[in-house]
Length: 87
Image (cartoon, rainbow, N blue to C red):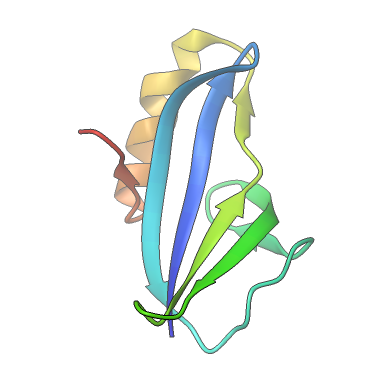
């Protein structure tokens, strides 16, 4: 089933980017499950969209130490198949 992963990249509690990735999986996501894709992130919320027949999963944010890391982290996620929302 299609699963849409959604995560924020943040520094100092400010969102610098929102990233998204669609995957096909037989896994049923649930809060507390850890997803590893460049960085471990915990599932915080799951919504099942009945009409679209997919799960929308909100992950804990990737909290960076400094703004200097943002561009390189965005590139890393893009190389792993994530898209930057709004780009």
